[in-house]
Image (tube, rainbow, N blue to C red; front, side, top):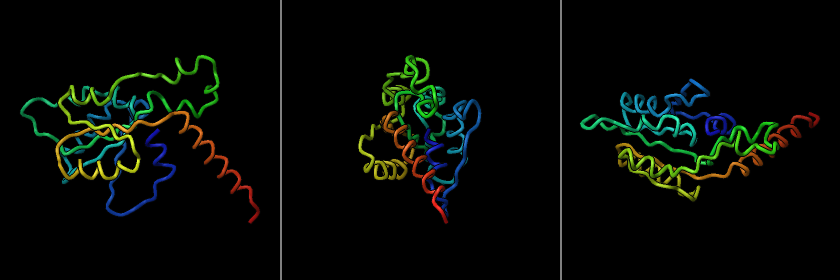
Length: 172
């Protein structure tokens, strides 16, 4: 969902380079790709991903001892599962949560720390820009885990879709 949300709401601006990963919906090798971008970049890199993407390539966090440590901050949106499916018709199915929601219940901060990465849980959205700027300024690898709610995200997307539809139907 994070890249879809950015596609929907982010305004273009100077001084920002956006790199996207492809694969199975962009999750294959995401962390490894972000590491490669950070190692090649001239300055710190922030990478945004969802929790399932982070878990899918968590071995990418395993930087061999003695290797150059990247200036990379992974910002992980943790909605405990597959948020995109909450926007699809099957969201109302009786077995939705188990089959499509795919809740993992994993402590993503602990995953990052186990791999030797400093990690912080950011529970207040207003704190995220400050914590992110701090991490980028400090340098080195780190992970910021931002808990969110899948149902609230789906409701917001429904509101945005309805507002867009209503606006497009207005006479000019």
